[in-house]
Image 1: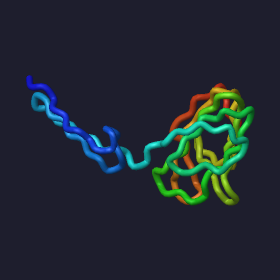
Image 2 (image 1 turned 180 degrees about the vertical axis):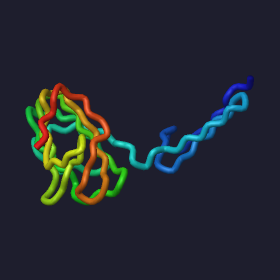
Image 3 (image 1 turned 135 degrees about the vertical axis):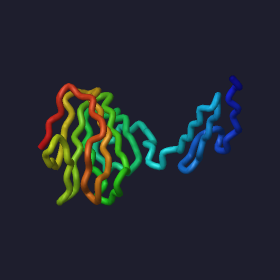
Length: 139
C-alpha cells in the first residue's frame, strides 16, 4: 500500500473556509472541506456582551450575560464554555431558542464548567447542537 502524499497548504498550514483536502490510499478516497461555519474560540472576562456568529467564548468572569445575535443564517454557530462562573444566554425581542420540543427566550448554566453550542435556524431563532451541563435552566 502506498503512503499518503500531502501537499503544502497556504496560511501557515491552516485550513480556511473553502479549502479542500483529498486523500488517496489503497483505493480508499476521502474528500474533506473546511467548515465555513467553524467556531473561532476566544477567552473573555466580560460580564455582558452580544455574541458574534461563528464565535465561541471561554468565560473567565464570575458571571456573564450573553445575548445572541438577532441576525443569523441557518448553520451559523455560537459556543459558550464556562470557566470561572455561571452564565445566562438570552435572545433579542421576538427571538427564540428551540430545544426539546419547546421554545425558550433564555437559558442559564448550573455551574462554572457548563457549555453549549447553538446553531442558527433563521433570524433570531436558535437551536442547540451540544450541551454539557449538570442542569441548565430554560425560561
